[in-house]
Image 1 (tube, rainbow, N blue to C red):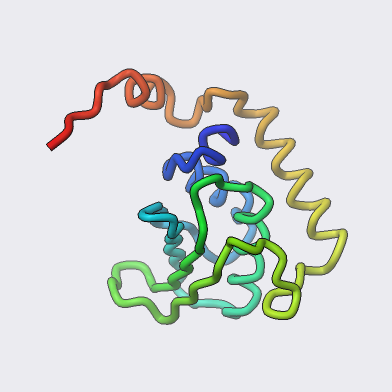
Image 2 (image 1 turned 90 degrees about the horizontal axis):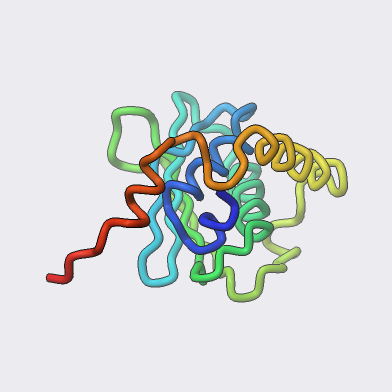
Length: 146
């Protein structure tokens, strides 16, 4: 799953992000990757602190090292609504931007995310069992060119 996420697979990225953020008060509802921009839409009834959401997602995306993502757009909206409450775009070309978004709670957060990721990988070895045969079928289907 991590290999697919690093390669830019939107479903894999969404699965990893939802797992890592499961104890937060939001859920990742949409992930798209177009022209180097990774767009993440998070949903919550009550949109929490913008800075902490952006910091967390920026840190996780940077740690994932998604090869084709050059920028990150995060949008927050309430369930059933299309218009975001807020959105923010961050360049990922230089992954370290400490002045804008410092890491969350220093080493403890890094260890927590790493620990969660390791537990997740132990539960769902590559290829992911979350979506069952769907991954295998998608990889084998030839893409039609219009």
